[in-house]
Length: 591
Image (cartoon, rainbow, N blue to C red; front, side, top):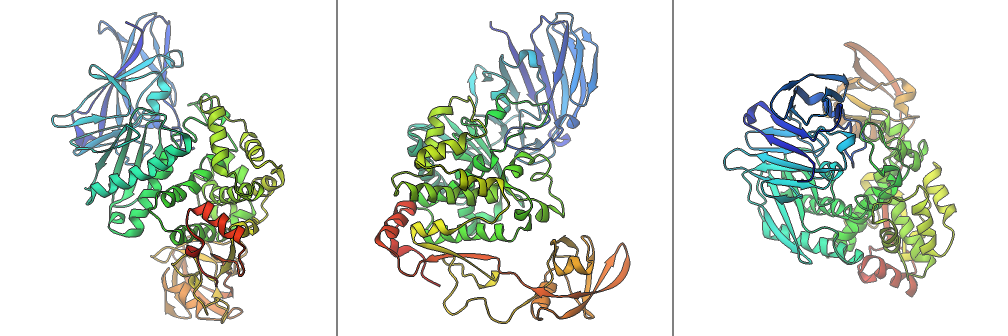
């Protein structure tokens, strides 16, 4: 029998939220140092998983107790004296996110990085997991099985393979002969046949780009909750958190499809083609790369695009969603402070740890990365007269780095220039390494132009402002804050009238000119007034009542729209169809 690290996970008291874990390590070492990761791949934040570990004991194979002591926040040291060692411990599991663990009377969900102690000396061995499930429950995981154990070829694969345990009956479908399972917790999907059929179409579109699928089976763990949305990608599975109420609306259903499309694209782009800085993973500390703008931003660009390519989103709706992304970018003052490369590099302390100043000081590499990826796609199409696209860049990276060797920090830029046949350094210098606003003129290649209006002037049909409504009527007063529904200020925009007047985050709004307001009514009341007017705002600050005069500014135009150019050429019409797979006649009309 080949040496392996063996785990047994049980949950005899689900209501305690405690997973019972047994980890057995082969002998041969004087000292065994068992550690737990501080982060999990795909979520770039130090989460200190070890804080949930308790009651650690150590034993030899014959049951003899061995002394174990904790030497730092993530390390337990055992004087093994060459013996095989079994550690027993409990993991508190009461945080339902795609990155953590959750156990209650209805199910168990656990991630490898948050659950399984390991040693660097045995990291490359096979890791076997046996799950002792309560009666009527079944364990689901993308790992292959041998006898009663799930088998990971090494610790990295184990970390990349979350477990769901419960009384579930999975939904199933097949893509190119590869079985796919959908395990749903929290509610039921009212139209499971439609869900499976539409997911199959999206997955098939992606498989065609790469010439097939890179795994023997795929598992989707879908957690329907009262709130929250997100996903975490894995090499043969994904875990998704989604608001159950969203499935009852067309927009919510569409959003679920894009979420699945996003995580599925990661099968190739970051799970196999990944930044070289992440090879191998260092689970003890942050792993820095400037490439998250590509690996997450391009994936964000493609998630909508693949739903469109699958025929599950109209071209008008696709352009509306793209316009919404442009609007969010425009409305983020931090785009003028932080470069896209830096946003990736410091995601550990910025993107995943936002505060009230984040909108003023940072930009999301998902958000701006999506826009940059769209512009890059169009730049390549323009340079090659639509012979090539961003698809070719992704495929080239797949061919060269799909073995997991890792993409160097300049690798994406070099591949894009190679595919385009021109040096794209000026494009990347502006998009990645400067805080200058992006150049949207390349949309003209597909016969579109980008404009910005007051947010409420944008129609929800194709991202095009209704005719006769330019958003350039009477100027509206502007305060420059974001407030919660209860009236507490959550963001004060840098350089805004509110900041100049001395309004602070956590001020509690009480009244405007003596009339009661809250977070919803205040902004409307300000917009009813003209720029330059002085208004008296009453707030509570640390229980003290203050009257603060504010000189209103002009509400900035921030909502983006995409519309046809006035006199499109045949080449522009053809480029539009090549990009979105739809005839020019379906393009949004002129403003």
